[in-house]
Length: 124
Image 1 (cartoon, rainbow, N blue to C red):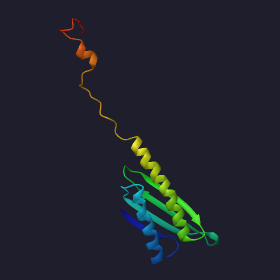
Image 2: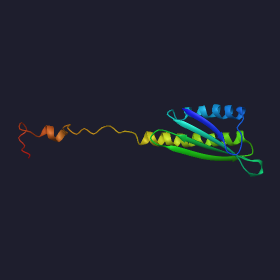
Image 3: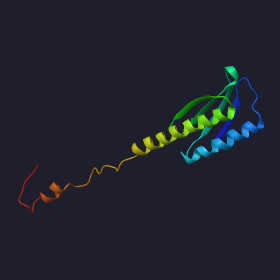
Image 4: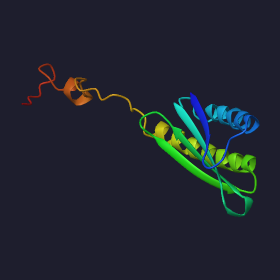
């Protein structure tokens, strides 16, 4: 899983980058096959921060969440909480739409087996 932390209109400190990376690695607990995670931090008006989290999951699924809080760490935490809920929903959806038991095209039905030359019935 590739994780990138970037900042728009701000420099991301090493401490903030390590915090976001550590938290993002825990997403594999909710969905194992995550391919890429992007965390984008952005300062907002009135000293608030927004965090955008983009997760690229298998089968072309791209999940995006946004969170705005008073600190950058709180925004990252809120975005990760939202993403955990989205990933569990996606995992449940994929489990439900999973492959069913394959149809047996050439299996004989009980009606076909009982009808035949020995039973005295003729069917065409």
